[in-house]
Image 1 (cartoon, rainbow, N blue to C red):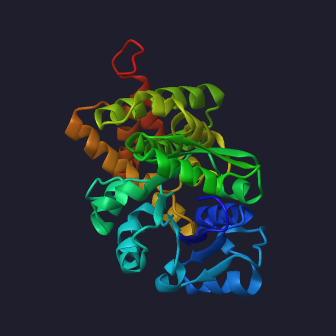
Image 2 (image 1 turned 180 degrees about the vertical axis):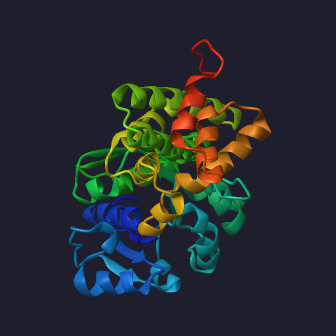
Length: 337
């Protein structure tokens, strides 16, 4: 699987469109599905997607708002809807999926209520045998930079080595380099948890704190992510790679990070409802935080940063008070377990 594949990207936000561009650059036939008809028309008629401003889309990139059309004959399908919409979108897509098609999940989050990872959601909607053809793609990759061909490295994880290798070959270009991994649980969880840490890092910046505080949040955030991930069946080493440390550093420090931006504005004193109403794109960490807290409670894992983020989002706790609470926790040795 490497040359001239029929591919479908289900989700035409910034990230889905950027991945569609990678596949187009690789020489595949790409059809991009959008729930929003105006986005489809903008791509078809103007070769632009408002979610990815400043990027001209090639004529070879097709777009549709019909799932049947998007998935017709697709050998490789990329699911990249917002995590809270993946179930409804892919349940509608199920009847059109080729039974031999490889499915790549590029959504980062935990489903609210069920606490399911995206691989679990997709198994429930498409059948357990999808795991034989399933891969998750994650890592430090702002959509805008990927679309502009900035050299980027990601990880593709599958329980089946052949599937990971085929997806790696399908996506690799001179500026987009996937590495393979078999820890699906770890890669999924790392991608979800780093968004919550980015909210915290943004809040600290919004409060006027600088590099010391950011470094502390990234490092202790990584410890928190690793603890919970291992308790849920992931490998610790996964969190030290591209899906963990790589994406965590990018999302906590980069100005293009939606989650960091939400956190920054909260730190500046704005209320969450106003911030979210101003944003067209989704900041996944806002809805993921409470799910992670529930999972941590279930498995008796300490996640103090996430708990304070939840207190800010759900209870309106002032970010300065939350940071003070973190700093004044009982003294502890530096451990990662």
